[in-house]
Every structure is written in structure tokens, then in C-alpha cells.
Length: 382
Ligand SMILES: CC(=O)SCCNC(=O)CCNC(=O)[C@H](O)C(C)(C)COP(=O)(O)OP(=O)(O)OC[C@H]1O[C@@H](n2cnc3c(N)ncnc32)[C@H](O)[C@@H]1OP(=O)(O)O
Ligand SMILES: O=C([O-])CC(=O)C(=O)O
Image 1 (cartoon, protein in one colour):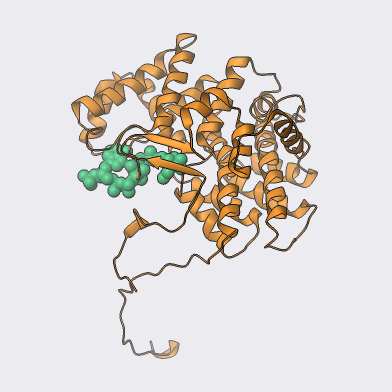
Image 2 (cartoon, helix red, strand yellow):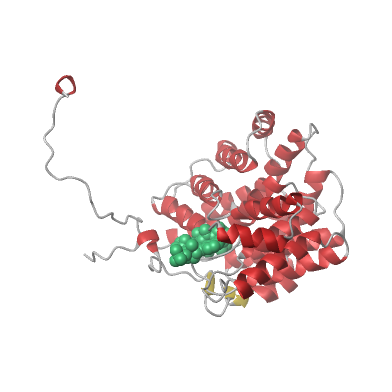
């Protein structure tokens, strides 16, 4: 038995995967061999889901059948809607509402408790979860606005339909394409914390609803998916402080404050997804308000040129530019992390299916550092 302690499992190989690969020094990300830039430019989120789940890019007829199979699973039942309404009334956070919704979806699973080793059934359940997440999330937002949920539109793709259900208005092409691209960029990323969480749950042969619920929970934290909301809150803090962004970032770094959206366990250079989102943010700024783009680039330039953080391997990650993109699309700030989950559910499901196909219970060890020879004293004598 190896006794090396790898805190945070840094660099530890625990599985083989054909799904995605990250070159942290080159800033390169591929899904099943395809560069993220090509997928973001040329594919839709549905094509990427198909790729992750089936191993190849779909032909037109495969994509049509696949899209239809997702579209017909979009509806969520009245109990889920009623729960979203209660949680909205109780001011619950959307990420917590989503965690609850995914857990509830299993109650109406038409295949019930199929044999956990039936991976075709798990794949169909995964498809249902992925199709329903946008509907539950959008309904939660509508209830917060004291509006009724908007029924899914079967003529719209997953990204455009989500924006439609959120606002009740058909998104324009720029919004729909930008959002679709954001979903592609967030779909998978090796064994990040939330994917690993889903895999740990899946490795007990628990059902896929449990694995995705766990993924949502792990993604919510500020060191992981929660950082996209934190970035936007920082940008707003800077804007409202009336300080020059440069002055703000100087003070923040002098105080030793961690800048959300910077740093990554695997990338030592700028995250390739941040590059693409930065371009989108710039384009949206050119046709709207350039304030957010200016603040983000000022922070990035200062941290890289003045503080040398990028040289030390602390560069913008995917969360640094997604916030300002979503903000410019008019999406509420606390929906950013749930949107990440909406996309990443595809990756969680793909990894659980891949792992369960050659399953081995995930069960590491801790080095015990507690006392060894305590003498037990009963409660009344303590
Ligand atoms: C989708 C995603 O999950 S992407 C990540 C999203 N999270 C964030 O953006 C939150 C901010 N970033 C961070 O907290 C970290 O960079 C993490 C958690 C993402 C990665 O952390 P780790 O790999 O564990 O690196 P660790 O926390 O050990 O940091 C290494 C060094 O970089 C510094 N550092 C890391 N991130 C930052 C940051 N955002 N701002 C300033 N310094 C940072 C640390 O202070 C540390 O410096 P030191 O060695 O002088 O003490
Ligand atoms: O890979 C990670 O650790 C975090 C990340 O960027 C992601 O999950 O997209």
C-alpha cells in the first residue's frame, strides 16, 4: 500500500476516460479528440451531448432523432413545479432549488428502479434529467418574478428554449448562439470536483439521479462553479465603488484577497474556454455596454503584467469571463452557477456511464492522525 499523501488528490490518476482531455501547460481542451474551439464554433450543445454520450458526432438523422428524444422529455410534473414555487417564495438559492428538483425527478421516472447495471436505462434516465433541468430552473426564476412558468417550445433548441422559458420571449440569434456556445464550453472537463463527486456516487452503483444531485451540490461551492457568480459580484462591487478598476484590484491584491475566476488546479496558463468567452464578452460589449469588458480586461492585465500572477500559473479560468457574458444577456446573477450545472449534467452523466461500464468502488484512505489508546469512560463518570 502506497502511503504518499496527495492532499486534494492533486495529480492522482484514478480512472481512464475517453471523454475529455486537458493540457494544462498548453491551455488546450478537447472533447473526444475535438478541440473545444472547433466545437464552440461549429457545433450545437445537442451535438456535443451526443458526442459525449455516444462517442461520435451525429449525422443529421441521428441528431434529429436525438434532439426529438430530448425535446419530448422537457416537461416537469406539477409536484416539481409546486416545489419550485415554494422554494422561490422562501427565497431559496437557485442552486439549492436545482439540487432539490433533480432529486425529485426520480419520483416520476417511468422506468422506476431499473437494474443499476442496465446502463442503457441509466443513459435514458440521464437524458430525461438533462432535458428537465432547464425547465425546472426557468420555472423557479418565473416564480421568483411572480410570473407563471413558460411551457417549453418544441421548435427551439435546448439553449434558446431555456432563454425563452426564462423570459417568455424568443431570444434573438446572438443571445441564443452565445448561450449555446457557453453550454458547449461548460459540458465537460475531466475529473473536476463535481464530476468526481458524481463518479464516486455512481461507483456505488447508486442511481443516476443521486449522482447528478451530488454533482450539483459539489459544483455550487465558490472554489468550483460558484466562482462565476462571485466574479460578477466583484465586477459590480468595483463599478459601485466608483473606484478605478486598477485601484480596486491593487487594493484587493495588497489585502491578499483571492480574485474569483483566477487560478486552476490543472491549467498553468489561461483557460481556453476563458479565451472564447472573452471574445463573446467583447462582441456583446461592442454592441452594448463596454463597462464589464473593460473591468475584466483591466483586472486580467494588472494581475498578469504587474503582479506576474499569470507567469506563476494563476490565470483566468472559465468563470472569469462567463459572468459578464451572462450579465449582458440579461440573466440573473444567481442563475450563473445553475446554468453551469445545466450544461455540466451532460458531462456528469457521460462520466458515470463510462465509469460504471467497468466499475470499481471508489474508496481512498485517510492517514489517521488521532489518538490511539484512549480509555473509555462512561457518560456518568466523565
Ligand atoms: C470551473 C472551475 O471550477 S474553475 C475554478 C473556479 N474557482 C475560482 O475561480 C476561485 C478562485 N481560485 C481558487 O481558489 C484556486 O485557484 C482554485 C481552488 C481554483 C485552485 O486551487 P489549487 O490548485 O488548490 O491552488 P492553491 O489554492 O493551492 O493556490 C496556489 C497558489 O496560487 C494562489 N492563488 C490561487 N488562486 C488564486 C486567486 N484566485 N487569486 C490570487 N491568488 C490565487 C494561492 O494563494 C497560492 O499561492 P501560494 O502558493 O503563494 O500560497
Ligand atoms: O477542472 C476543474 O477542476 C474545474 C473546471 O474548470 C471545470 O470543472 O470546468
